[in-house]
Length: 223
Length: 223
DNA sequence: AAATATTTTTAGACTTATCTAAAAATATTT
DNA sequence: AAATATTTTTAGATAAGTCTAAAAATATTT
Ligand SMILES: [Mn+2]
Ligand SMILES: [Mn+2]
Ligand SMILES: [Mn+2]
Ligand SMILES: [Mn+2]
Image (cartoon, rainbow over all chains, first blue to last red; front, side, top):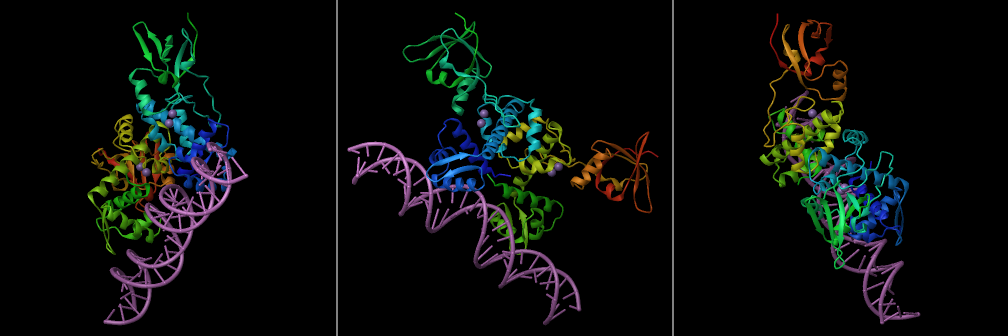
């Protein structure tokens, strides 16, 4: 249906559109798909002719309904494959992304559906990101950044802001993985680093950089 | 490493090389990869420069060790994916090939190894074809065509010669799938059609066309 | 409002893989 | 051995996607 490259552009534009309401500009897309602005202009014209997005010279782009549909479908495939790699093939959460970047372009509706079923219709991928349903519906978890919790509050690690391999490896090493229950003990006034409570014999000091990049599902407060 | 297209050419040439010792000619390759002879000449020059095959104008081609290595690796990936699709995702054996044609080009040694392990290091794909080992070793089953069995001889269905979707569907419908035990009852002198015995209440008449395309592992003879 | 800086687009070229049509080489008939 | 047929290669185009360098448009400073 749509090429490898087209799907990548649509996905990139979709993600940029997610994190800001403004029209998406050429440079941002170029950065995102790792190419040059001139190439983006060419591709954007082509996608516009195919009615996958609206493009006005010097004004940036906006996905059409069909463009958004393709983008979300690609995200769905990406996250289902990441889940497969992690839960079935035992890839660690910092290694699944690159392979899923390839697998997400395999063309077969039936394959996606059967994979979904095989995985037990998962709601989230290994990074806590929601897996869009067949119809494109996205059930966003109501998560907050760990640095938004106050002293005494609890939460369960449910996602990450930073998806980089280094960060994911760092969390893994410290056993700060999805599902982990955390209680805030103390927030440093000096550097906003946070002391957390994991269990009777495990406390930990997390830098502000780290806590800002962890998403938690807020739990009950203790005092 | 090597492109989608390069892998497909190498695989096609490898398979042609398998079924005849002679040098592989341009037209055969063109037929195999569904393109035109002129395109084959272009690609063959390129693969020759990359030392994946030996090419002499008007004399056909022959894979080098490296070319063969890549071809077998691609076959390995293809058959592992077919096995995955069949045994884990419940695709029928006549639908796995087309999707595996895409999946076989995913680049990741680790993925192949983990998939192999996840599947329990299968020896054969859903069509009975041997899955090459990591080191390229291929353990060919010692199978014979069903029409080579004599009256009273037994065999277990272990593969097919014809891999077409229509043929596979036909076998499936008649429950002539891998592992099925068969005894030859009678071979018609008129049209070489064969009556087979499956169990107490199931006999069947198979055309010569069908029996020639079924591979069996020969069993003990009864009389 | 000019001048300057930044962003975006155009122009033209390159790569990979493909095609058609014509030319060259090889194989088969007569 | 010629004539004819078939196969293979070359020549020249095309499409998708990319690039650099220059031109045009827009944004920011002064
Ligand atoms: Mn990812
Ligand atoms: Mn993810
Ligand atoms: Mn196959
Ligand atoms: Mn097969």
